[in-house]
Image (tube, rainbow, N blue to C red; front, side):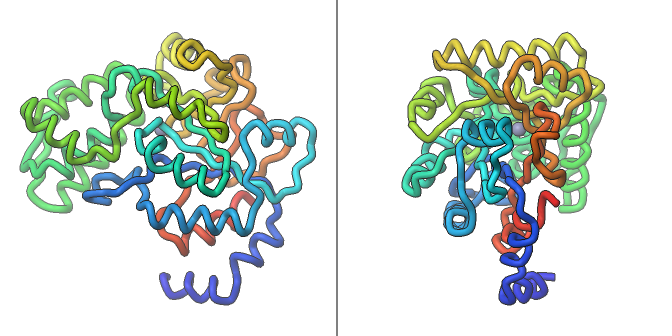
Length: 324
Ligand SMILES: [Zn+2]
């Protein structure tokens, strides 16, 4: 497969895809940083690879701000050559690594932050899951709130446990997700947890001072990604969904003293109900499903985005291939 991709690119397959598949595209990353273990810090991309991706995009596309994108969407004036750069969750490396690189190339970008994590500094549930199951060297773990025990004595057990917990985190209501996250952390001592947080600091969320500093850069837009990074799925209490979607906007606007017009769904999950709320509250909402074409006929509260692959060859194929 690796060789096929290489050959495809040597014969300029990416150029052909781009020429025939002319559409505006919105890409999303999470973080970019140095990593101790790519297997634990899967949401973080290597700095060198990121810079290569950005050089490639700058050479082949017109990278525009989210405000400019909204303008062209509403006025139906796309050149179909546009790319918008977005980053989810609000990692500290967005300020310390991403911003200096993108500012060097003079490129605009948007960061969608989960306000509760910015306030508390708590790592995101999926990061905690990976750190505890894959990055702490534990042989077994307990999740009392779900009455679950996992043995972690080999690679297969580790992988299976991580996936099982990840599914729970993405499908259960927020209160149960919080209980599971706390249970995960209790498998190590307070001291060990502090050490693990320091070891895997690439997944640390920004604090408010850092978000404010980032928001002051001319090329940066801050959007909302709920309060507690909840997934807006069917199992979530509607009152909770409403609070998360509406209050996160109020919190961001209070902290930044600026309008928060854009929203991205955590994990891309949405329902009709959350959709209606987002369209009432924000100018535009973004999903994580990138395969539909963007046009002014789209529902403006679930605009598709393409998740960026970490392999450079795969990246050059996927981003030219989709949406189609
Ligand atoms: Zn997210």
